[in-house]
Length: 77
Image (cartoon, rainbow, N blue to C red):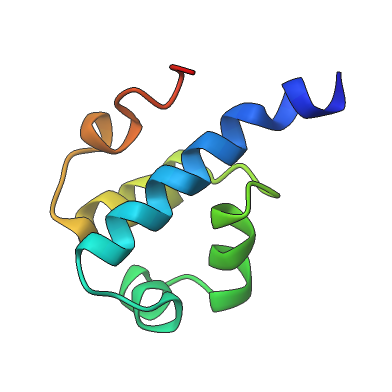
């Protein structure tokens, strides 16, 4: 049950990590460009936290994509 509850966070974090790496960012620089703390960003990537819409929008803007593109297929297994 615990894993199921947070599985969406883990899938989102994995996708986010791939997008960050594809765009040539390390965690520190990406978090800085998103204007969020590196510690918080790391927790998002590890699936420990669910980011707010505001934070997801900052992430999408930094990646140069839309919010819907950021979330695309995250709910798929």
